[in-house]
Every structure is written in structure tokens, then in C-alpha cells.
Length: 118
Length: 111
Image (tube, rainbow over all chains, first blue to last red; front, top):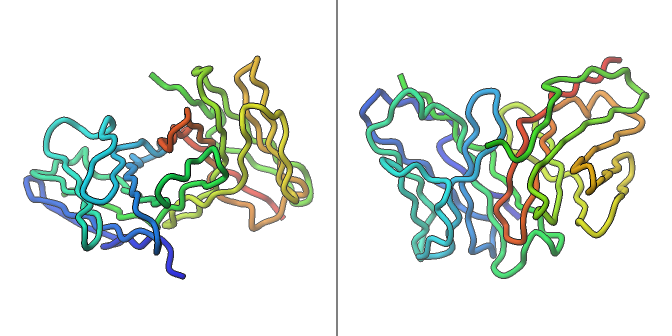
């Protein structure tokens, strides 16, 4: 029973390039969440998606960042024209539909993608 | 605007003693509170949670306390073991599944 799978584990990009981070949710989970952890900080919510639909993107920077969760395949977090400040660990979590945290269904996180912008 | 604060970046405790990690919050609308544990190069792992209608929840060596009037959450680990050395994050939510995390406390258990 595989957990949340993220790839790549490490990604190095030069300033101005594009970064694509992938997240495959746990089996049976149709909701995906992306969080970012800057050095020495806690995790910050970015976006919450279900298949083919963005539910809440209130934590996404207004420019250069986008996310999708297509009907088939993994969720993708895309960062265009990366800058040094984008260097961080990006974590994905998943949950089944409908169930909320208040019903004892905590989010399960993947091991993250560590993005380094040089 | 930091809604959730963990004021101690690090904590060192002797093996076998009690570890107490603290978390303060400002948003009185939070209704569910969680603790996550994180090892280097891994994702956060859920540890224990409590809803706002309770003030204590216990699971083995781990107990979470909630003081709503003080807007304060704490995690007690007793007895502390070397494998407990990790970064601990408190997190909380208001109804939906969007978690707000504290900055983390690095716990080191000394043998």
C-alpha cells in the first residue's frame, strides 16, 4: 500500500528555468495538497486540488506558480522562471474525498521535493 | 501574520525524562489541532490530534493538552526515547483540510 509518492526527490534549476514537481496520491485518494517549507520555517499551505479542479489556491504566489491534478496521472506543481527565493522543500499530501480532518483523517505527506535554484 | 507560533526552536531532554513541546495560536476559530513529527529528508508524519471540544488526548507515551482560553497547545512525551529526536510541528485547522503549521521545534533526546 504505497504512500504519497513525490518525484524527483531533488531538483536543481538555474534561475529562469522551469521546475515541475510531481505528486502521486495514495491509492483511493482524490484530493491533493501542496505545501512549501522554506529553510528554518514551518510548512505553508499553497494549494488544494481534487481531480480536474482547484478547490483553494489562496496560498499560491500570484505569478509563476501553477498547479493541476488531471483526470489521469499525477498532480503537477509548476514553477516558471524560477528565482533563488523559490529554493525550498515542497511537500504534497493526499486525502480521500469527503472526509475532513475533524473526522480523524489527518493528511499523509510524501517525502517532498527539495528544489535548489542556482 | 503568524497565527501559530512555536517559540522554542530547539529543546534538549535526557532519555527517560519528559519532553514538553509548546505551541501558541491567535485564531480562536481553529477547531482541530494536530502534532506532526519530521525526520530529516522525510515528510511530516502524523502523531496525535485533539478537537476543540476536548482538553486532553492520550496515545501511549504521547499526550496532547489544549488550553482554549490561553490559546495554548502542548505535547508531552514520557518517557522520552532517542528515536523521538526529530522536528515537531504543531498544526491546526478551521473546519476544512487546510492546515496552518508552526515553525517547528527540534527535539534532541540525549542518552
